[in-house]
Amino acid sequence: MRRSLSLPLSVLLPLVAVVAACDTDPVHTDAVNALGPEVAGIPQGEYHRAGQPCVLCHGPEGPAKTQFSVGGTVFFGPAQTEPPIGVGNVTVLLEDDSQSQFQVTTNCVGNFYIKPGDWPGHPEYPMLVTIQGQPEGTNLQISMQSHIGRDGSCGDCHQAPPPTYNSPGFVHLSTSDDPNFQGTDPNCPVDPVPPGF
Amino acid sequence: MRQRTPRTLVVVLRTTAVAAVVSAATLGGTEACSTPDPTAVIEVDAPPFDQFKGVNLTAGQAGVSHLLELRCGSLDCHGQVGRALRIYGQFGLRFVDDAGNVPGLEPTTDTEYEANYQAVIGLQPDYMSLVYEGFDPPETLLLLRKPLQLERHKGGAVFVEGDDAYQCITSWLESGGGDAGSGGTDYGACGAATAGY
Image (cartoon, rainbow over all chains, first blue to last red; front, side):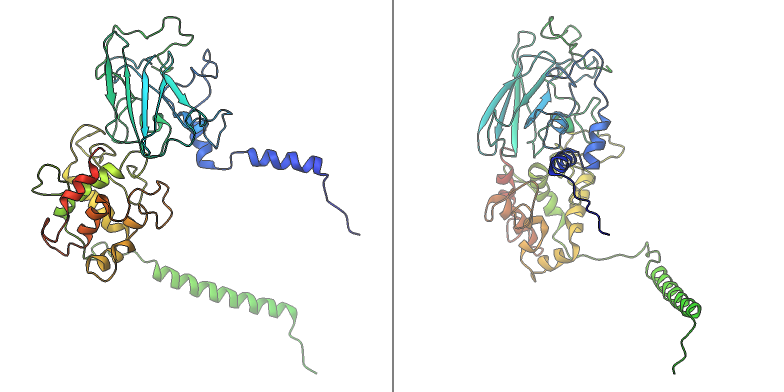
């Protein structure tokens, strides 16, 4: 006797949708897991995970709901003699291969991000980047020496200091650390020194 | 009437036959996978190293390596150790040795030039010889096929046929041992192709 195994569409379709939404790339899954859990006291949102590769989670593969095309964190100095400290009100100037330009400002922990709809159709890689700000009254400006080839996450290459053979360290506005610099906003809801430093 | 072979005998015979075939294949495979001769040398007729590195350069000129370092070797593209075409350089991946160099600081070292040269030649050594000896056109090589997007390239179209970067690389590939500037590598094109990068 033949038995029918057909499932009603009302059951099957949500099941397919759930499976399709799962991250099926083990490399991506491992990379996301390697970032670790959220830190207590820092809620998910614009201030979290400073210095980490934003687009890893905020990209097409998720798991974050909000997508970014570019994202990163700007720190004050190279963190050679002082802990890294995020710097706010820094203008991040981007120019892509089509000469289209876009600028965005960092928040009080140094984070910035661009959603795909903010700069539609861009960036077209390669892309050049300059950052500028006046965290201590004096204008500071620094340009990345090479272009960005295709990675929207600053933190993929700009990993925690010290610099190594494959990372120049965190993105930083000043070429030297300043022990007197304590952040740009005393009312910042999150400590601009990332957890672990 | 034909006598039927007992079923157990058939199974035994079949098993024996399969075992013999597997054994023969294993022996053959072992023979074929014997340890290669560590002293063996495969000679590749390839374009000159000195013109790849660039020697006796004047203002506005560059060697082929410099072009690859700036246009291809960013840390998020070919400046990664896992890439077949792995490019070291001052502004990207650094060769891990006693020097302890980091991205963005010390100039490209001789060790890095040599490693870049080996990566370029070793990508398709046989085709490289055929191109250098004039049997095949430069576009045979992935070194050009990828950036010209004649084949899928995750980094997109990086060069355009006839532009300075194309001229730089093809002049080196087709140098035939000629001196730079006189039938050899077009250092001027290499320099022009890196202006602004």
